Length: 544
Image 1: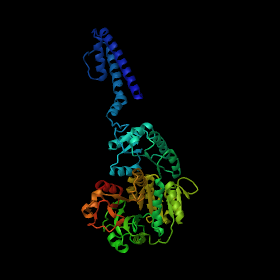
Image 2: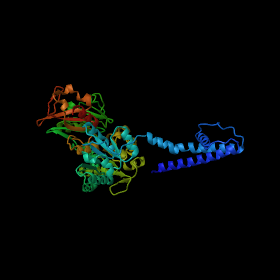
Image 3: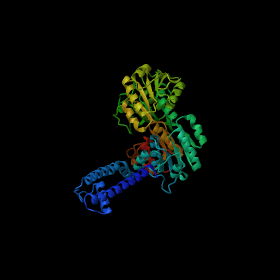
Image 4: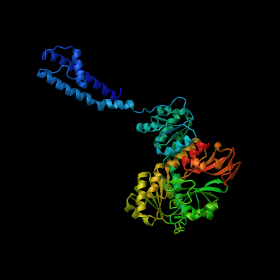
């Protein structure tokens, strides 16, 4: 018997005893003072009617003062006992009865599913990837309110502790395709150990925050241990090194001499401020601009009259030499050959990866962090303008915000942009939904950990190499598309139906990149598509 049941049973017992006592006293009073003998049942009925306020006056008026006093006391105590009990006992009971009950186990027969322990914003991309491929998933969530919300949103949820045997068995781990542990380094290790106890043969993917802890997860029994933060740091660092070096890292090779790459337009570059049509990018560099991010919104194909502002990210395809030529047009003109200092805000795992890459490239930088340690140059809060003045943000070429808290990163973006309109702001976001807010705050380039993590986990869980761009805003996927077989690209109308673009088709070892509306996809072809994650997932749903 739980606490609520004991409390309810106690209240009912006390209430019953009080009503019985009142019934005895009332029966005696009616005979002694009113000279109207009544039965005990009549007396009890009167007490019940009085307590519940459902009936008055059957025996009134009373002539004797003691009887009137008794009725007054009975009225008062009954009302207090009944109605004060409603919010304490009755209402919670009704709420429990009417609220959504999240299951503690999945239905019998569920198999080949992916178990996710537990829900974090980082698994949103993974859930979208699984859904687009028709793979069922079950979330093991210990928090009751969050489990209820997810269940009401249509997710398959098991309310249980993810590192408990009951929780994993309730999610039918033995029949699952894989288990994903992405809570914290210590909890994930516990989940892996529990999973080994329940089902040794199930593929276990564990996500670590600190790369040096990966070994312990492997010792626990994880099949794949992922560390998305260093990859995110590498991507952010490349946005700076690309501007000041001739190396163009991060390009996705599609064929022997054909690449897809994201190119951020830097402040002071030759094309910044002009429209796509006026910039003449295709004529000057012979590349194909298949999409562009404008303030966090992806357009494919981009409107020729759209203005290329600083911070616009172009998604282009072409040969390596052509893309290098375009990259030269997007780099800063005034400081093209200068290695201006970069301010790195936050020196966690992402920040450390950024500074390590800068060290290799020989770039100057200043580190700001709230914690005092050897690698931190300035100790302070980056949302404080005085701290930014001490760092010299007004004279810096770029600022990388590697903060783990999105709210702090958004505010820091506003402060940095207020200090300087010229400095480039490159930001890390924890959640994908924060990306657009950071763009509105003034960031030039934003990449979310949730996006990088979701792609990495999806590739590991599905044991697939379809996703060939883990650390970019745009996802590039190599896949077969049976729904396109024997159809021309013009007839399929891929862009309008899915929001992504087919950039190449591989057939019998030959990569075709000159794709016009009349190009016909044949059965067995592999298509390379690019676009936002939801767009590529939509492509898989429509044509997969």
